Image (cartoon, rainbow over all chains, first blue to last red; front, side, top):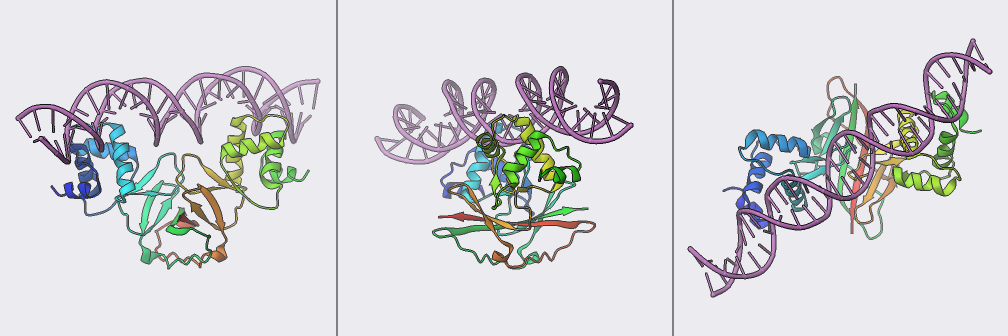
Length: 132
Length: 132
DNA sequence: ACCTACTTTATAATGATTCTAAATAAGTGT
DNA sequence: ACACTTATTTAGAATCATTATAAAGTAGGT
């Protein structure tokens, strides 16, 4: 199975639930954005057996910690995740509450001139809010 | 009183509570970041009488809608607000969970090349995550 | 002073997320 | 295969920020 090694290599036991969540998250051409509730719905649609909501939370957080998912910094009552973990940015359509990917080439290079002593830059994320 | 006109001009009645919250938010040299709970604490420290938590929420949201406050897009269990409503960006220190202002001059100009049909760019916000 | 619409308030409700502790499954050595 | 240890799953409870409710209070105009 294609995700067993991926999980083992990061010290996660390849359980049935995790493998099924991998199928939903990573077995697609396109990357996508999701909230936990949307993911749970997708799992229900795709898979016969039921996975506990707690497991969905556990797994998403485990995958995030291992770098297979990213949180998208945005103000919403729910947390948004992204299966695209490459460096990129987002449009956020305020009216439709929809996220749209911005490739790095869509945004000029960003040069942070200020330095903070003893700290390294981990990521630079741009959120472009859209209105009609 | 210095905030009465500000409130009246935006269609908000200058109530005692709103004026006191104005004092806490805007009567300082420096702008600052806060959560609702931090603001409530500040109000308690600065003011004799008590303002209901619901009023703090109501007022902050009213001020945000009028453009006197901005939400900062960041993933946290609490919503962060900023009294600095000019265009600028933020460092987020992951370890200390602290926000630091980045002036526009600290970040090169950002040129968004992609256009979305029928939508205008309302804001461009950069979040730079810091680690040790 | 009176009226109307807005505001405040305490409290309840909501809802996403996290916690708990018991049951289950995976990995390891024999 | 078996026993043993440790990780994982799970249902349900707990937490906590935020929003809703509805009754009491206040501002501004007439």
